[in-house]
Image (cartoon, rainbow, N blue to C red):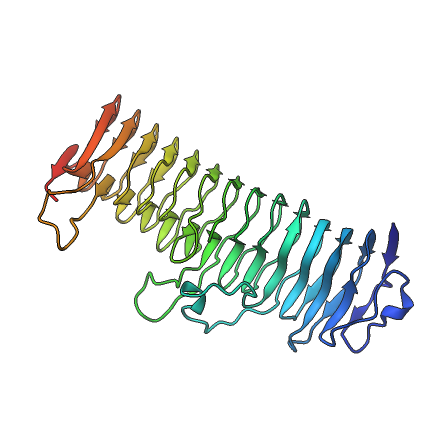
Amino acid sequence: MTFVRVVPDRYTRDTFKPSRYPGLEGRSSPGTVIEICTDGVTLDLSGVVLDGERKGGVGIWVHDCRDATIANGIVIGFHYGIRAENVSNLNIRGCVVSDNANPLDAGWLPDIEAPMEEGFGGGIYLHQVSHSSIEDNQANNNFNGISLVRSEHNLISGNRASYCGNVGIYLLKSSHNEVLDNQAEHCIRYTDRFWCDTADSAGILLEDGSNHNRIIGNDLRYSGDGFFIRGHHGEPSNDNFVARNDASYSPNNAFEAVFCSGNVFEDNVANYSNYGFWLGYSTNSLVRGNDIKSNRFDGIAIEHGQDNAIEGNRIAGNRNGIRLWSNPVPETPPRLDLPTRWYAISGNRITASRGCGLLVTEDHDIALKDNGYERNQRDYVRQPI
């Protein structure tokens, strides 16, 4: 093991001298300030500021090693503050990795059609990183606060990744991670098309085969979507456990998960948004024990879903409490050759809906049990498709 304590000061790529510190590598990239590619390095940056001066590059580049620790530094003004690639047992703790790349005029990104694993800049970027912990850092005001790409079995805990222009915490092709007790508020980017178009910005975003993650206890309020499983391209993101998060005050959806299966949403807060839960084309999912209050449109909206369970939620003051619907394929005559869409809906309390407590199209086979309705304009309506 090698312990490196950098002398407290402000450094740029022109003023930092790695040769002063045994255990640090000579820089192989001119855009990097500190490079680590040796096993067992602990880097103590107490009192140190690494300043990229808005010239791009990377503050700290860790690659092709294991058992590295980075602690207590301030890394600002780079394209990526900290970048790690092909690393295991990496620990980043107590650092400020804020105010790095965050273009304000990005609009919609091309990764909707072709995912760009390289990303667009930001705070902490992990590529093929495993069995590592990112804890108690600040990664505010970046494009992406903390990004995981092809990374598994990591702990992301107690970080602040708010006011990011794209995503606070981003998982792409990344599974079996724990994202616990982080703050990713106000992660939002508006376009000029209409008031709720936030260009898929989100507090937490999963996509393209990000499976079996545990997303628990995060504060995601005031973001484009609070929590988002995107399904525009690549593999679905399935079997994630999403619990005790607050994703309220989204101009779009507090929680959105599309084209995916087996996800569990439990004991979350989804209030004061456009929609509480938007789960289009979701299957075998469970929505249980959530607070879903005062959303502009529906509390839970599922288009073309199947085999889902909605249990024990407190749903109040939405347009429709629960809305389930499908549309026939244009070439298919109505009500012919359409799948039966099975749901179990039980133990929900649905109150003060401005439109309907439970609104469904007639191709749904619903098992209803112990639901309570109060002060809804209408309690339960089945519609033709």
